[in-house]
Length: 341
Image (cartoon, rainbow, N blue to C red):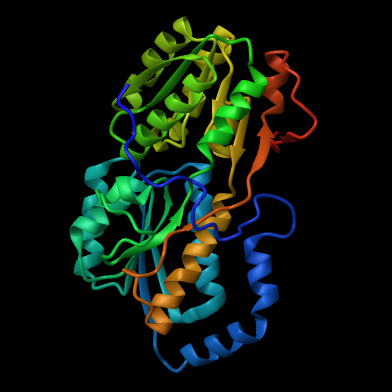
């Protein structure tokens, strides 16, 4: 497979979000800045109002949580002085572009782009309106920036959902040391999925696995591709991929029937079809993106120079239903994902 050449890694510029427990980024921010937040809100309630448009690529738990975190942060800071309009593109890139162009025509004050195709559509639609993105794995890849220095240099900033890929490879090796063949399945239309697949291939080959990529172009191909991957793989890795996330049930129906376990790139995919993940909390990165949007709207911060922020804490999680079905016992330091009844 084509090797990744010199883009950023997951470990840079951590902003200290906590992936589980009560000490979340949201709670720490509230606890440490109560008086400052009150003062800032009072300052912003002198009649100034803001219109913010949100482009969310597709509806699934991870992106939903990020959008909710973003909205909560802005509402807590600005109250009724901000109007947030959320539009969902239902997984269609062309619809992302239509939504972005509509927001530009409406002259919104800021666009929030949730997922890579949403960011790319927003960035194509405007070079003037500030864009704050979230759920982006790698901004250099998403925006085609070759000389990455931590900020975009254009009207874009935001937060990343990149978990440490080396840690996920280590997790796969910890759980399945005797496996020989690892399949990686992802959407060929998502640049950040290709980035993750290339990096994971390097890490997994370092553990001695034979790694093969299986790609689908859209949701219609998922079932067939997963069947092919299961026929040749001892274990499958699914990166943070929006199409895969929206098709997690389909993936699970095929892989579980075949008895092939899946290590997932994030909690939402793991909840739908995986056995384990090393994951961030999407609400927290969305909330942090909301704070960045507030800084731009109220304080005049320049998105071109605001450094992209990354989660620094991650949680080993597992799907207790799939683990039981496959009769796989997880180590004690894995936390069970809360499943719906």
